[in-house]
Length: 67
Image (cartoon, rainbow, N blue to C red):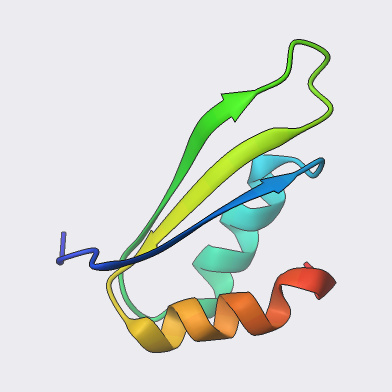
């Protein structure tokens, strides 16, 4: 696996697999999605995504509201 030098953290009510699917379909470099925390009710999650390529991170940020 390449060097995952670029990353973002965010909170979301959406399921992690929604993001996993988008990342696998849209990123050209290696990526890693990490569930950092979640509420007992499962309503909100803290996720982190680490990217090998900065361009993939920028594309994710741009598309985030539509995922």
